[in-house]
Image 1 (cartoon, helix red, strand yellow):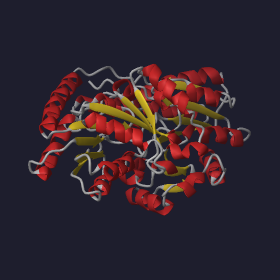
Image 2 (image 1 turned 90 degrees about the vertical axis):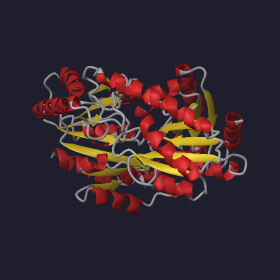
Image 3 (image 1 turned 60 degrees about the vertical axis):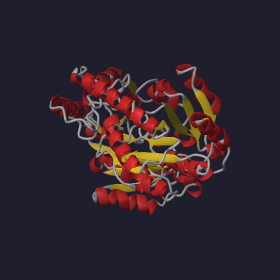
Length: 230
Length: 230
C-alpha cells in the first residue's frame, strides 16, 4: 500500500476492488448532497495545487458576502488546523478535516464534516457550503463529495501550462478561476493561452481571473456566488 | 478504481494487495539504482507542487554546469511533452514519461525511461540523472524510483505553511529548496518559519533558498550538485 494515499503504481494493472470503493464514494456523495440541500445550501468543491490562494479567496468572500449569504466551510488538509482557524476568525461555521496522509477528501469523510457543521448550526440554515479540498491538482478530481459544482483554480505563479498538464480537474469542473492576477506583471502567464487550453479540454467551462489582494475581478466571483446560491 | 490515480478513499480500510505493489515498486527502484550507477551517475528525485519552478531550475542548472557535469533528465507529467521539449533545447539527453492520469512516477515507469536514456547515450556516461516527478506534493513521496537523494521544493508564492501541511515529502527528503525567492518582497513568506517547520519534521534536512530568475542562492545549489556527483 502507498503510505500516503493508497495510490496504485501507474505501471500496475487496475485493481478491481477499487471500483467498489469508487461506487461507495459516489453513493456517499449522493447522500451528502441531500444533507447539504436539507441545510438550505448548495455546495462548491474547490480543487487546486497547494498554495493557489483558496483560503485567502474564502476569507475575502466571507468579508464581502457575509451579510448577504450564510456561508459554511469544510476545510480539507493532510495535517494541521491552520486553514480552519483562519476561516473561524471570520465568524462562520467551519470544520477542519485532516486526511492523515491521504491526498484528497472523499465523501464519507465529508459526511463526518457535515455532522460537525450540523452540530454547529443547531437547526439554522446555510446558503452556501464551500468545501476546500486538499491541495492537489490531480487526485481530488476523481472523488465526488456531494458538491453541486466543482471549481478548479490555478494561480499565476504556477504557470499557464497547468490545464494541459493536469487535465482531469478541468474536465470535471464548471468554473476555472485564475487567481493572483495582481502578479501578472512579474510572470509570463498569458491568460488567453491558459484559457484556450482549458476550453479545449472542456468547452463548457466558465473562466474568470481575479486577485484576492488587489480586488480585481472579485465582483465577477461574488456575482457568480450570488447567482449560484440564488 | 479512481480514474485519475487509483487512490483509495481516506475513509476506506487498507487494501492488502497494495502492499505487494509497493514491494514490487521498491524492488524495481533497487534495480533502477544499479542501472543508474552503471551509467556512471547518481540520481535526484525532485518532488513539489505543480508550478514550483522545477523545470526552470533544471534549465538554469544545465546552462551553468553543462560543461562540468554530463546531465541527463527524466521528466514526469500526467500529459504533454512540454517539459522535455524545454530541456531538450538545452542539448542534454532527456525523456518524457507521461503517466496518463496517475499522480506520481513509479519505478517500473522510470525503468522504461532509463531504457530510452540508455538508447540516447549509446554507451556514453552520465554524472547526474535528474528525475522531475509529477507536480504533486503528496503522492510521489511514497514511491522510490531509484534515486540516490530526494529533493523537496516549495516556491515562495505557495506560502510558508507547506511543510506543516504536507509533511511526507519532508520526512523522506535530504534537501529542501525554497524557490522563487526573488518574489519575497511581494509575499508574506517568512523563510525562517518555513525552515523551522521543515526541520521539526526532519532535523537532518538541508535547507537552501534560491531564485532561478535573479540567480540568488544558485551557487549553493550548484556546489551541492558538484559535491553530490563528486
